[in-house]
Image (tube, rainbow, N blue to C red; front, side, top):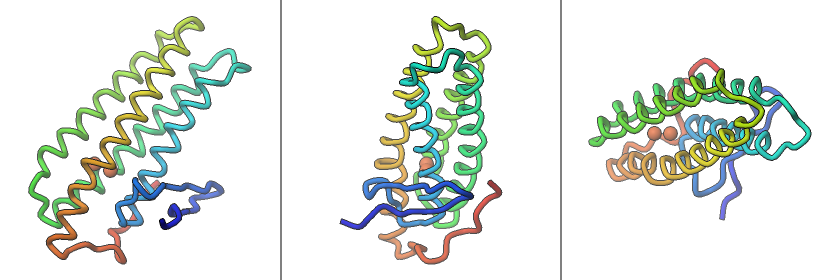
Length: 163
Ligand SMILES: [Fe+2]
Ligand SMILES: [Fe+2]
């Protein structure tokens, strides 16, 4: 088994494990960043020393929202370029995720000390499940499509969007 792809962005090392690897380095970096945000939600959820978590919850969700928009735009452009035949269906999944993320963001101002951990648990579980299923099942469909078509472009990814 190959090692995860380590990518340095700023001071941070992002890694994505084998089952999440699409082979497109740019997309793998973007996915690793989403998984890192998911992990941050879990760390915040289990942090018993922190009293007020709302600002951090907001930071994680806003960061995710920003990077998700860039990732989805990049991925959709890539799928369009290779002529992926399930593009519309895939875009709908992206849109559903973005709506759910916005719902979470909208709930943050109404959180209290009593409800913040409950929501964090919900956020973490949703993110973990969504990214796992989406990357390993849905994104892999365009990877397979590209490989079958012989248009897999593993050495020359599209230019990286602004971070
Ligand atoms: Fe996707
Ligand atoms: Fe993706």
